[in-house]
Length: 335
Image 1 (cartoon, one colour):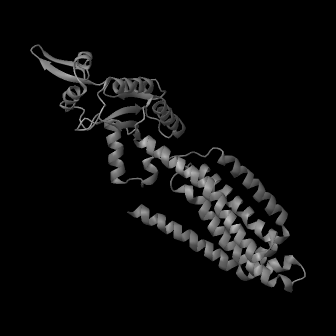
Image 2 (image 1 turned 90 degrees about the vertical axis):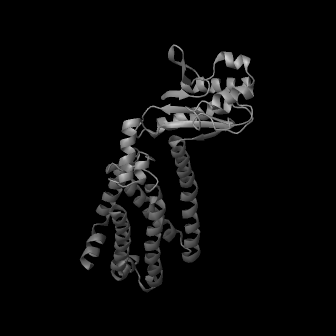
């Protein structure tokens, strides 16, 4: 340990330079970090349920769809049906929307004396001749779209938009969701509309992640900084830990990108975890340094003594923390 300390203090400029260089390189790679909020990120490779989902999506299509729903007693009136048609037509024109299904463009199969035929679910003659209540009864008696495009009582309806498969291109997926939301905001009446579907859920979670990062990431270090300043009353001792935390975060996310991993529900907590671990080690070092600094003429000697006395315990503590996270991952993988 003494030899390692002597080597570190002798060549500290070289060590600092190498660390700065590596930090800049890994910081550059952070620019290429990707976000992945798919279901796969919450599952373990080889999970039977995940494999079943992947098989189902391969055979029957993926879960890339957005559903717009609303309810009311007047769904089958001319103004509301006209609104549904406008929303349907505009969503069909959104880039990366594959197809749209609603009351106004859906078809049904009917039989007659000559055979079977495909006809619009809402015929123009029915719209003109029948009252809304009669039209409602006619539509809900058609079981093909029941609980899909409309509820059993005929007072709720949905517009379903299928999105082309986008893989991990979350940015394009978010643009589709935002475009549909804008259309709804422009075309809807005073009732409340609901959007759901996996792309909507993923975007909501992503927005929450970004919101947490913007709120928690600055607030937590600020509160910890106040506590550290209250205990140590030294700006230098307060600044150094946060510099180290920043370097650790850059290294962590840079290595995350280099290893082809993504920012997701799990890796999103890395900054806070690194903050807690680094602050704990820093507090131990600063506390001991404050206690013995007055006994030494040169701060370099005091720092050496700190490392000799508590360097190994702190290192073992950090290793234990790492092993704890590794064991948690091993338990998850073994399930």
